[in-house]
Image (tube, rainbow, N blue to C red; front, side, top):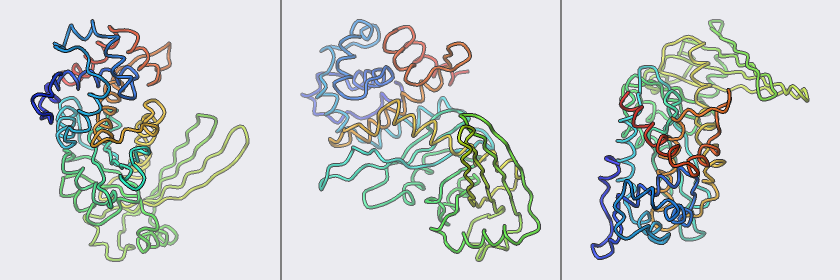
Length: 371
C-alpha cells in the first residue's frame, strides 16, 4: 500500500466519506478472495469488517458498491499504472537473459455499442517471476503496434529477451527493444509478407541449418518441437532495416492425440537480434506461450474477466490492474494438496474463508521482495 497509497484522490472534498487508501485495500483484498464485481466487494467488506478494522480506520464503515464503482471510474489509470509498475519492480527480479512476453487481450464486455469501444490491454509477462510486470491500454482507433512502445517505456528490460507475436513484428518495435538494451524474438506471418517469403526460402534452400528437437508428453498428447536456425541473415531483403538482426528461426511442431491418434503439424517463423543456439530459441519461444496459459486463460477462467461488465469511466481499465495485483499475489503463494499445486480458483476461495490464509498470501509477496 506504500505504492498504491500515492494515487491522487479524484473526489471533491465533501464527497470523501471513505479514505481512498481504504477503498483500494478493500478492493484488492476482496478480489483476492473471489470478488468479481462491486456488489461482491461491498458484501465481502461487510462480512470481514472486524478483520479489516485491525488494519484500517474505516471512519464510516464499508463503502457501498456505488462508491467503489464511482471511485474507480474516476481514478486516473496512469496513476494506477505508475503505482502498479512501482510495486512490481519492488518485488520482481528481472535478470539477464530472462524472457518477457508481450501480448494483447480484449476486455470483452467493457464497451457500449455506439458509445464506447471495447478496451484492449497489452501486458508484459515474466514467466521466471510468474508475474505481470506492466500493462498498457491500446488507445481507441489504434492497435498493439502503438501500445507496445509505450509499454516498453515503463519496463526495465536491459539484458532480457522480448517475445512478441506477429502483430508486434515491426521495424520500429525491433529498434525500440534494442534501444532498451534488450533482444527481440518476433513472430513473422503474412502481415510482413516479403519477410515471411524470405524466411520460407531460406529454410527451404539453406544448407547451414542448426536444429534442436524436444519431445514432450502430457495432457493426453505427444508434442514434438523442432527448432531450426540460420545465422546467415543475407536471405532477408533489406536486412539492415531490422535492427541488429542476427538469427532466422523456424519452429516445426507436431502434435499427436494419444486417444484418437489425430495428428497436427504447424510451421512458424521468427526473427531475432539474439545470437544463441537452437536449443535456446526452442526454450524461449515455448516460454512465450505462458502469457496465454498463465495470464489470459487464468483471467478469463478464474477471474471471469471476459464476463465483467464494468463500463463506467475508467472502471474497466482500473479494475484490470486490480485483478493483476490479485493474480500476482496469488501466483507467488505456493500452496499444495499433496503433490499437486492448488488452482487459482481454490486459492481465492481459501483466502475468502480463512483470514489467516489471506494474511499469509498478502504478506508473502512482501517477503519475496525483501528476500
